[in-house]
Length: 383
Image 1 (spheres, one colour):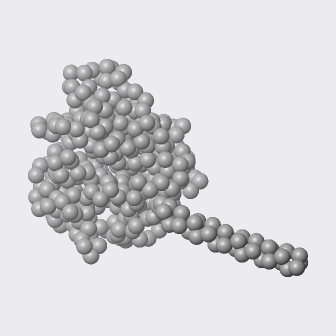
Image 2 (cartoon, helix red, strand yellow):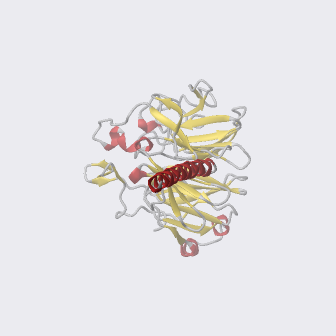
């Protein structure tokens, strides 16, 4: 009897342990059912092309607009409308995209480097007027073109004459603040301040330390320094820029970094001397070489890190978070925030163009247009 009691006790203990294990497993399943799912950052391919090396994208009026500079050597339009079937149509029409050397450039795009949507929803096109890489602007070529994105109607042309876009200039990008627009000159280091109402433009911070590329901050991609020629590292002067959500500050810097900031009130005042304006420039953020940037209404800066094919966010506290790093994002250029919150990125692969490899093209076809969710965090490493 003692032996039987011992066996029954052992059997009871086993059944109890078995039930406890089942209960614990079910409790774990129930707990997991209430856990937040882990989301991984994913790349959504929005479009592809072999006809243009796009380095700009803008979303306005329910349409997607793309652009790419002429010097990349592709056959596509300077500015295109991405159709629902993912084809690229010349925008606003074929005539604007039909410039040929020797023709009047007043009403034709020569070489477009940037697109941006102003606060009023109108599309602005930045025409560098420079058909060849490192070349000089053609007569009447450098201009800003304001277009209604819904109708394609050209609302106004803002010519930037030789006193503004000088020999060696490469007018790069644009941002807006009230009745003023600010542009960067990546060729001949400076900022440009445009009075939108009058069309009057001024060069400021001309060859200032804040707008000039530093020779100790090189662009390194795929483990190699990007060069424009033998023993000639590519140096890009004032390039990215953003306006703070309250409109009080302009953030800017060379492509290679670092970024500075300056009060917009001083930029807008033509009576402020160049010395006083330069003295008002402050260090802002020591960012790495970037392809492009976008800032949301909360002041978060999204930028593409050329070194690691990454996309990062810098929040208003200065904290930098990596959102994604992926080989497909090689020289992701000027991003654009869509109304649904996604971040669109044209993948330009500019460093793989023949100009940087003794005439040998190394780009991977087709070129991609992608988007990511900037609210999904991949990792928290600092660039």
